[in-house]
Each structure stands twice: as C-alpha cells, then as structure tokens.
Length: 115
Picture 1 (cartoon, rainbow, N blue to C red):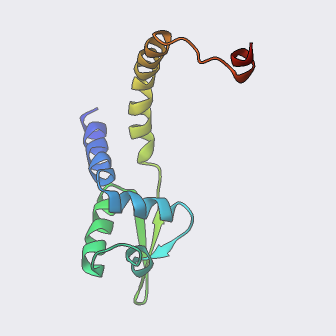
Picture 2: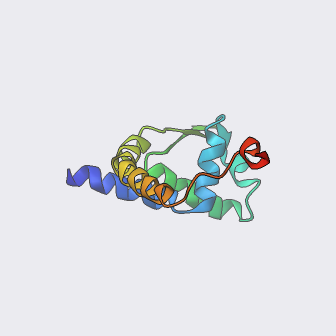
C-alpha cells in the first residue's frame, strides 16, 4: 500500500506541471524525439530534457536511444492507480453537484417561453 501511494505521489508530481502535461498529451498521439517534444515549449532543450526525466521517473515516458536520437513514448500504465484514486472521489463530486443542481429550477425551454 505504501509503495502504491509513493508511486502515485511521483505520478501526481509529474502531472503537476503544464509543460509535462503538454508533453504527455502529444506523446499520446505518437512517439516523439526529445527535440520534437521541446520544440513547441518556451524553454531550452536542457530544461525540456529535465522535464522528460521527471516523466521517466514516474514511469509515464519510456525513452529509447537510437544513435543520437532519443525517442520517447507514452506509458500510460502508471496513470491507472491515479485514475482509480480519483474515480473513488467521483461519487462525492456527483453528490455535491446533484445537491447544487437541486437548488436551481430548470431553465424554461424556448417552447415554454413562448407560452
């Protein structure tokens, strides 16, 4: 249990940064080199590489080296425990939203407004 919590801590830490979430989003489409991952970001290649290392430590990115090319691919498996943890609290959010919705009457439809 402690090991799983530590793993989730590392995953949530990796997801806490906008640049890293952007990288993961683009890796969901296809494999990219480190240079391609860094290109749209407003940071140096060295800074982008450090972000990729954080993603690698979280197990979210796998890197293969082909000569001088470093190719990165998404490994979404570590997101499963984070997703399950969030899903557990989903019912709480739904109950709260249902209670909030009950406070407001439904808006009249265009047909009802004409009557």
